Length: 402
Figure (cartoon, rainbow, N blue to C red):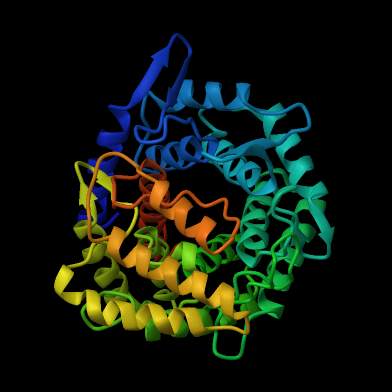
């Protein structure tokens, strides 16, 4: 693992470790801002700790995670505003159990997770995220495919491998000519079809598609990932910051985790084109700038002097896609709100202002949108997962191991 990556992973892991509550044979990590305990955070933290060589906390955290599994094999997406079974979260937890299988086996839980994710495939390659979010999200397909591919590799499971291939094919089939993986390809329970380009979810989709192709080893998937990397490269400015004006998904605007997913995706792409290592380095620079006390900020910070051009960028974001005027106005207000919030800092989360904006425009949103930037355990867990995985990809490239 690269020295800078190792240092950052160690720093973040140490900060997260201090939050852990150990109770006999179980341990859990409670979000210091929102007070909730997320299954995904546990999964991502355990994967990072295992890839870094192991940690005594992994075993009790996984014991807690397994206790949280639902009878049908799923794990819940635990959110401030909802708590419900999710194939996406089940895939993430299942991936963590696979990572830990040699040292801390939980075979029964893994099999139940495999069955649940397989059952979430509602048409070839489309995996239903949850009852609340029913659109075909390409990042969800890629994530479920990555878990099933790894499961298939370990257990020689033909059904899991076939489902992983269908997931990857669905993602590749809906990639645009310019390399974009749109966020969603149909409406589902959303008011509109959010078939939008997004810097953050471009990296997310690429990351999990790459993990799937580590097993599938399909040239056409690597070709798709190369096109995706070209789009992501074009969105990255020479200064190392993304140009978000072409990124149409308001709730993912300026998420700091975008740089982690991009870093890992660029490292993967560098196996075929070495120039992407420079782009990965730029993303790492930006991630280092987002750290506060060992945790990643929710959004990348910005200076007040750069606010005026950021408002112009927000107007461009709001104009992407064919949507009614009221929804465009909401997206513009949302983007400006985010531009202001990411420039302020707090260690608490005040959300009344965003709720007032939603009421004003009569928009329903499940998003929790604080008015100030804050150190975010959830975002930190995503960064930990991506950086620790990029370390593996980088090492395999240097040693020639694939």
